[in-house]
View 1 (cartoon, rainbow, N blue to C red):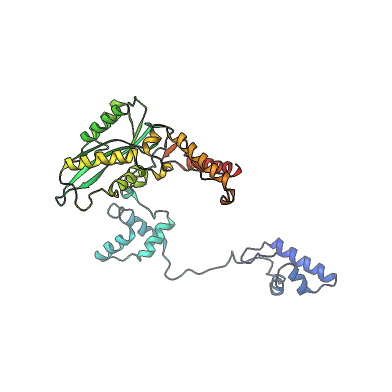
View 2: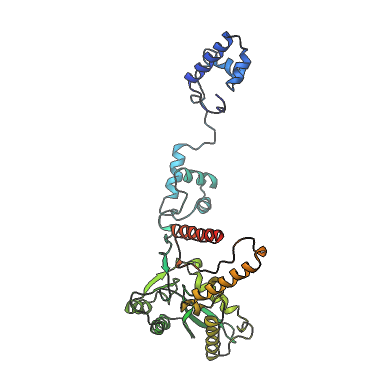
Length: 368
């Protein structure tokens, strides 16, 4: 019987408890001690032993209605109002003031919310319901020129309010800048020309690469989409106003504008100056920049497949150091390896699978 407080006790259970206590008393036990063994109070048992105590009357209790409780007619009136053509696109916090301006008081704002919640209508209704945007399809690249990302960013000029536009295409697998251009305006024509030139420079074949971007006008322009179809490049788009769907381009632009040579204060005098600076930056970024997400090799080394030899050499150096001074190494040496594949917008299943693989790799290193 223990732990049953607040639960409806069936008549059969009550009768069983009364019979057990009587049997214990017949054997010489005290009534109170018998109740304690059943985790039952003596007063409760005595109440059950009364003629009307065998039934639990809580479910049959006659509870009077509150004076301020809504009638069915009033509930129906509230639902009719909020679902009417005039108010179906408005929340209760706006419906109630509208009614007050018309000299009507039906119920309080909280009552409107309570009625809608009970009817499962406390959400966007009718035409006010926003369009649902699903997460972009996950794409995986296990080599260069399989998955690209591109975006446009502003470059400041010496004229206040005037900007140049930097177009950049980045390979997600290697993080290499495979194409870029700078123009005085945003347009799908400039974007399509850049993608076409990048495909020629990287010798990309049809159906080889996926190009990811956000939902900007140049990205979805008719000229751009037609060019992608002509080149056999599959487009992929982020959800509206979700920057995390295109993180690689966002990260690259931060690197661009935080570079020590970026003229954040002096700004660019002309578009030629901006192009000269960007050309130097791309050369540094691709061939000199030790990328933290690539275990500190350059994007070009990753792009050309030189990373395995570099990591193998680093691993041998660390193993030699551990052999010479093992007391300085409490566990394994540093992991100088990268995942075999990179996934853009991975779903939960892909992410958990990748995490399990990383854990296995870590366990093998520990065992070694």
